[in-house]
Image (cartoon, rainbow, N blue to C red; front, top):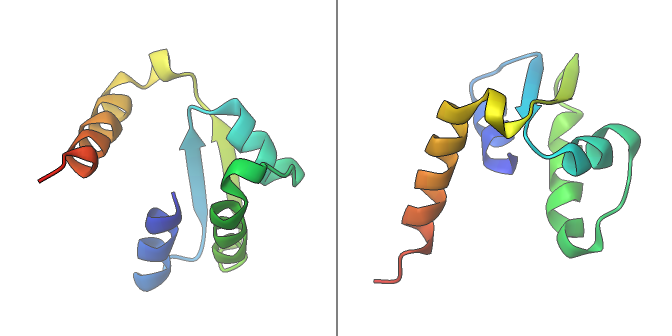
Length: 83
């Protein structure tokens, strides 16, 4: 998500609606919850989010967005391949 926000910033988008399959992450971003495991990344996301008005974070169950989930999994798999 951090990289997506950077790309959105670089293309001068003004508003965003972000759909996530992690209800905990949506709450962390919307309600200001802290998650120690990813505190630095969350802070980066929050800082970037201030550049967009309006911006929203919406929970979408994984089963309702199988295509995006498959794409994200494929990208993660490629990142985790050790060469």
